[in-house]
Length: 127
Image (tube, rainbow, N blue to C red; front, side, top):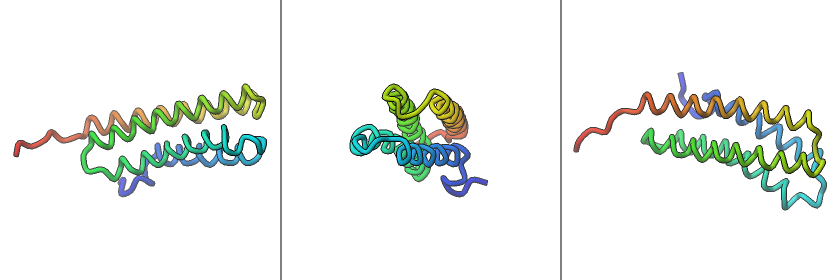
């Protein structure tokens, strides 16, 4: 039974992705990227989980779906920042592919959650 956003599989996996990105930034990014690329990739990965949480707290399914769409955008933005990190030689190809696999998995879970919300949304009652 889902009682809180922390019970959602998409949240759990997205949280693990966020934690992995934080470790990557702390261990592999040069100090001059602290307020540049490092900040951007941290923000986008945090936006992913934050929007899942905020959407879960919304009363209407459509609002929750909209926040999930924002999370999906943040997921793609995170991938772009990681590709940039690879291009700048802050990570190797295996690391990038590992993150891409995690991101793809989060994307599938997120799309599944959106589809679930669409199917379970109740029609609005006439006032």
